[in-house]
Amino acid sequence: MDYPSFINEFNNGLAALSSHVPAPSVPESQDIFFQLSAALVTQGWNAKPDSFQFGPSRHRVDLSKENLAVEFIGGNIASALTFIFAKLPILLRTHPHLLPVIVLASCDLHPPLSAGTALFEQVASLVRDLHPLPFMHPFMLIGIGPAPGPCHVEELTSDLDRYLISLHQRTLDDMALELEHPTYDFKAQLPEDTKKTAKEICALANLRGGGSILLGVDDNGQAVGVPHHALDKIQLTIGSIASDRCSPVPEMTFRAFPLTSNPGKSVLIVRVLEIIEKPCMSDDRVFIRYGTSARPAKAEEIRRLLIA
Image: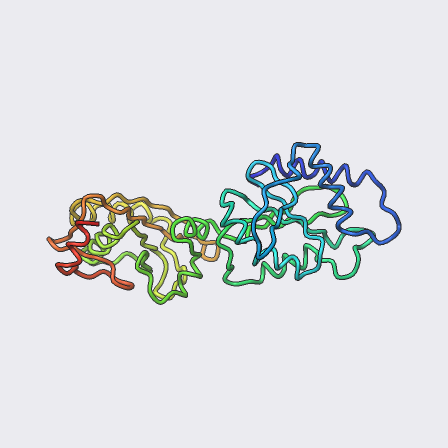
C-alpha cells in the first residue's frame, strides 16, 4: 500500500499479459514472467540491476526501479525458500536500501502451471506459519493471477515489531527469547516506586546508543498492554520522574502501539537517548545496565563512562 505507482505499473503489465490468449498447452512460469518483465521494462524498469555475490557465483535480481528489486521465482518450493532464507539476507547486507519484491504465480492461473512449480499460496502459507518470524528486513511477496484486479494486502509484521526492529534489530518475540537484554527493559506497568524508574532511566541514558523501556510487556515478553486512557498520564509521570530525579535530564521519546489482541490497551515504548554529558545520576549515584536490570556503577565503571 506504500507503493501505489508500483502496483499500478504491475497491473498494467498484467493487463498486457492477459491480452495474449494462452495456448492450450501447459504454460511455463518462466514464459509468463518473461512477458511480464518485458511489459514492465516499457514502463521504465531496469532489466539489468546490480548483482550480488552468493557463494562462488553472482546472482542478479530480475528487475529494479528506484529502491524496488523484483525477483521472479519460477522454480520449485526449494528455489523460493533458498532465495528468501539464503540469498535475500545477502542481498540486503550488500544493498540495504533495496526493498525486495518476490513474485510467484498463483494457483488460479488457467491452464495450470507445470507440476512442481512453486505457487504463491504455498510459499505464502509457509512464511505466514513461521513464528516468530525470522525476518529482520522487509520484503513483498506477490502472487499474480489470471487477470489484474484489486490487491489483497496482508501485513505479517506489526507496527510494533517494525519499530522494535528499527531500534534493536529484533521483534518482540525475538526479544522475549533472550536471557539478557541490556538495551531494553520489560515492564508490565509503571512501578509505583519512582526511585526505581529513575535509576532505570539513568542506566539507559548512560548506555552507548541508549535504550528502551517497553511498558505493557511482562517479564516473559508477552504484550499485556496498558490502558489507552492512561497513556498521557504515564508519559507525564515518566517525564516528571526524569526531570525531578535524573541529572542531567536525558532526552526521551514516546511511541504507543495499540494491541489488536487486547482492544483498549497499548504497548508504550519509552526510548531513552544516550546522554552526552555523562554520567547521568539519580540521588547522587551513577547507574548502569547490568544484564536485565540497573545497578550502581563502581568507580572504574564511572571512569570508563567519563572517557568513553
